[in-house]
Length: 216
Image 1: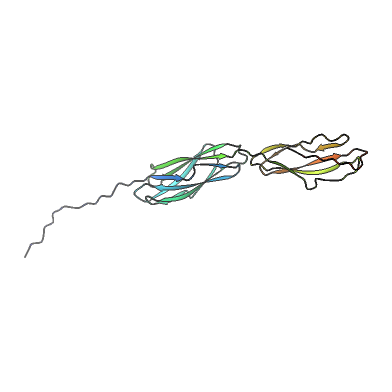
Image 2: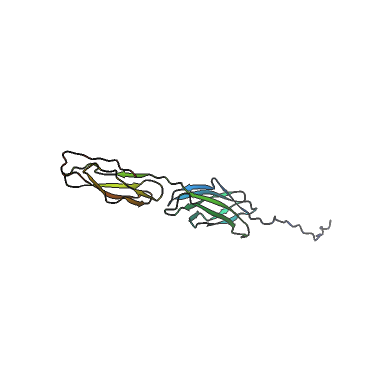
């Protein structure tokens, strides 16, 4: 009979690669424009160059402190893969035109806090568009000589930012009187106000008419 082989006492060991965690970013656009009191959404891809699955935590800081929403702010990423994240930056109400905000986005490995990646998103308030508008539901009225006609006029700021709109009326013909109840309006984008145009014909007017085009 053959003797059983003797144990040599040698042990075979398998070693795994060292753990590695490295978040990465990618975005289709790093610079967006926005109206005041409106939001811009950056579509970001968060990935990992690690050799193990990782949980990545996203946080932000900024220069001006505009409101920022990250959805979602925690993502699970496998090595070599990406997860999509929306980063929404909101410009404040009446933010001045061309105001620029920098949002610093940071992705940190939840498993290894010393591993992180960061970059900057730029949000700029659009250049101002000035667009005052005047309208009246009853632009034509009839009145008697010596009395006063009252016409309600609506002024609207149809531009994209806060504006101060001044309304003026050309000089009336001889004998006519014209008066505006208000001539200056501080209006936010899309806001409107109403003022009265008071027109007085001459005392001895016969079938006369008076008309003017109003302007900013």
